[in-house]
Image (cartoon, rainbow, N blue to C red; front, side, top):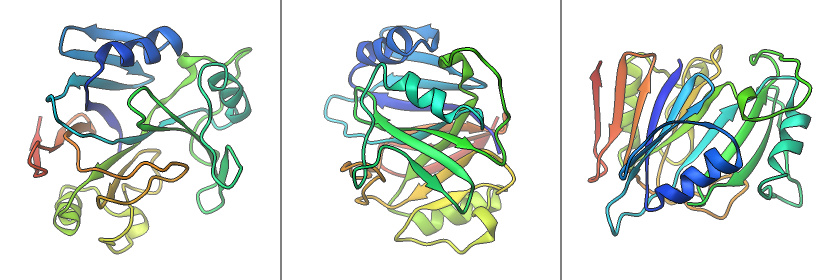
Amino acid sequence: MKINKVTLYTHDLEGMENFYCTILGFKRLKKSSTVLEIKIGESILAFELSLPDEKTQYHFAFNIPSNLFKEAKEWIQLYTPLLKHNGQDEVYFERINAQSLYFYDPDENVVELIARHSLNPKIHVNQFNADEILNIGEMNLTTEYLIHVGEMLITLGIPVRNNEKLNETSLNFMGESKDDAYILLGPARRNWYFSTKVAVVSRIRLVVNNQLQLEIDKNGLFHYKTI
């Protein structure tokens, strides 16, 4: 699976543009009074202006080259503090042979940089910058109807990783284990790793594989359509 485009909601378009484009150096693709689109490698990260009282909380990961975790860590720390867990500011996931670090954006969404050593390509550069980000590798989908949404995703060709059973109380990695992108399907009110932030059912749209749009609407209901 590939995550082509993600649309999230924010009260602060200017803050998001400043952080992602001016500070971190990602390319701005589109900007209006209500929409911001940013190039994240092969993916697009879009923000739309949210409703006045709308609450959102997102977690997403950017894939980085498998050999550049140290360089990416040095780069991101120039611009924003890293989140810590048990005194550590990075983690190695032995099961998937990957290293990650985490930080907040202006909305305190939990952003992750992940180097999947067995899947992500190697790139040789003199200095790491935003251009070395490969794509969006993970995006959360928080729902009160986890089993229903999970079963719908499975019928749409997005299985639970390694064909595991859906777990309605935990995080489910939806996607093929041979791919470098996952939908993180989880329930509300669980803490994000490396963070005190709690998962909130939030409006979101995702385009995957250039052919399927997935959406959680303002009422927390799941929709999909082919494109």
